[in-house]
Length: 108
Image 1: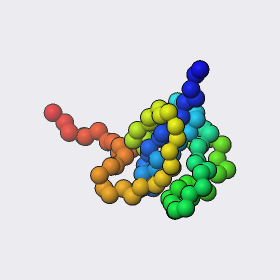
Image 2 (image 1 turned 180 degrees about the vertical axis):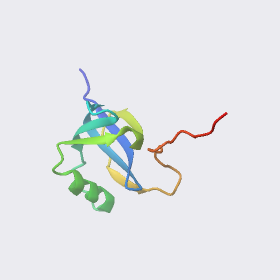
Image 3 (image 1 turned 90 degrees about the horizontal axis):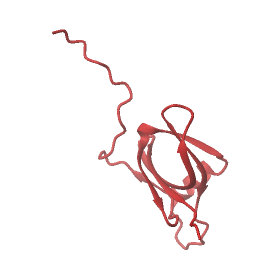
Image 4 (image 1 turned 30 degrees about the vertical axis):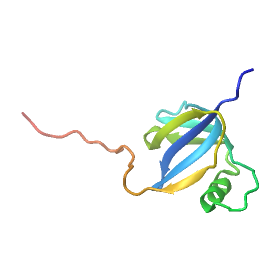
């Protein structure tokens, strides 16, 4: 019996680190982007509600597909089961790859 793939995607968005789970990811036809579809949010009833998880649920509730820039992605893992989606504070230890790399104009 084949197991269904679940992917954990960790990326930087507006200075925060997002950790989300999805059923589908692939290279986009738009150069430099990864497409993410079918977000998974735990629907388990919990006594303690995580505000970051609730923020993610509301932010992605009506999203069919996301295009995430490759330079924002920190890591993608294929996992056996989904976990709790969350937003972590970026404490300055992780930063995206610079977008505007300029060649130096030095002459030999």
